[in-house]
Image (cartoon, rainbow, N blue to C red; front, side, top):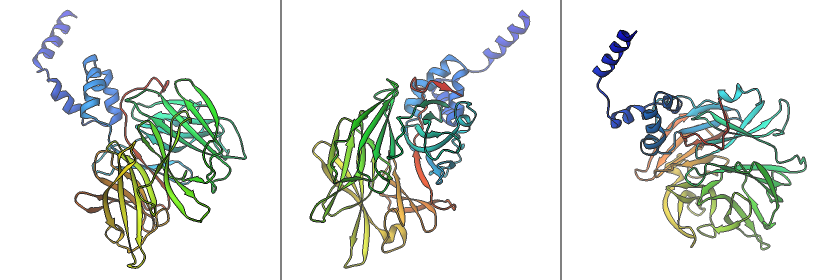
Length: 383
């Protein structure tokens, strides 16, 4: 036995020890799931992955897009870079005995929010599931309460740099069409309870809850329209915190803008606007950035004609196309063309339009995914 162990030690000594830089370079090539499992190899590897590797070699950046149909089931994962990457799977959720039927709602900084319901139910009677597909951690969130007379629009807020906990914000409206907020319900994974607040929002503020929100400066930002008695309207951005207390309004970059999308990129709030020149029969997409958040100073970042983007003189947001995301670290905008079901990108620096993929299966919701590789105490269960 001693002779056998001596041979193993001698063989191990004959193998050169790789420096940390080389190990980091090798591990950085692994997919998220394999990377997390590699933490079990040894304590030095665990420390490299949890600390230096995750923070420097694997920064939080766009990994791809989840594509879901009307049933909210994730049908595919699309990688925008063209590189071969493993499918980000949620199969581990389906194996949990406590989880029944779940459908994707949104994602935020690596965590994914699902609605949770019993089989056969028409709405999320069991509340929600929040999970991290990179670590396969998850937690169930109870329902905020049943009220068949209201519609619920739910958003998740998560900033791992500020806190390991996530928050959910539910907006209750009378109908899907008239998106006037009546109540705001909030949930914190830190307290594990729901809180209810009567809405203080103006009745003339109609919020675009069908659109994805932007999480900037610890606030959830949603596009909204304010209607005046004169018949005119003004595009706005409403911001709310994770407790539903603070409700602030940010004016759009100009009075006559038509908002197509509100998002975050490179740490700043971005506003994508349609501008149409009726006399010339031309239209363009303008990308604005909120340079000074508190002074509400908007700066025009880029403009591009619809003819260059779509090959058409005119298009209408949400009917002919949808803006999907702006890359978190680059001047790259992603959009989906409805008429040919193509996911495309536009580089604001090179002005190049690229076809990423033809999705080929009808209208669907496309959500960006930015992985988060660290385990979270807020997600108690693990596959």
